[in-house]
Length: 112
Length: 112
Image (cartoon, rainbow over all chains, first blue to last red):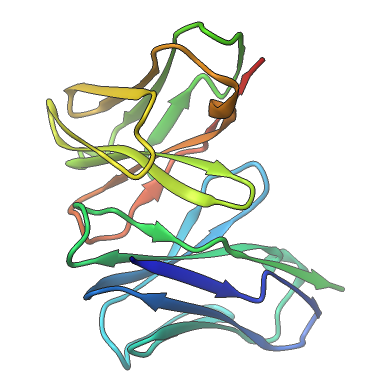
């Protein structure tokens, strides 16, 4: 059964304190891995897509990387406005069309 | 923001009543999806559509039906609402079945 596990569930950082969020996945064949940001009361906002091991994507203070079993979202020198829940999702070659399988998310809090 | 709107944004209804949620897009994306988000479960796929009048079930489809008569509109119907269907419902769109999905703002549904 496909599974996506995110850790930690919650992370508290001081402003400027860099860290990483983890997303481990178990699928028969990875078709794509996606990172989203979700603010309270809003829909998920797309951040990155990764398709193959070794791939990296960057956007401002965020960098996403992918291996054959997991993905990391690195946050460099975070600011309070980076506080949100970060969601990871995968699409499996063997799954239904476009069925994103989501992890439960990591809630990030950045204190000034 | 991707051109996705959901209506209503909030709804309170009684057990046993029918409810229809609407998703409207202006992006001409082929794929449209309905998810529900609940604490402890993350986002789960209810139904999806891969074209006009082409729909299929997702992970948690029991008690829900969908229709898509136009490219831009995807309707989710709860034939007889139950308290277990109290949730936040998100619509999403994508170009293909393995590209990123863009989410709407959500509908908070409470069934009393």
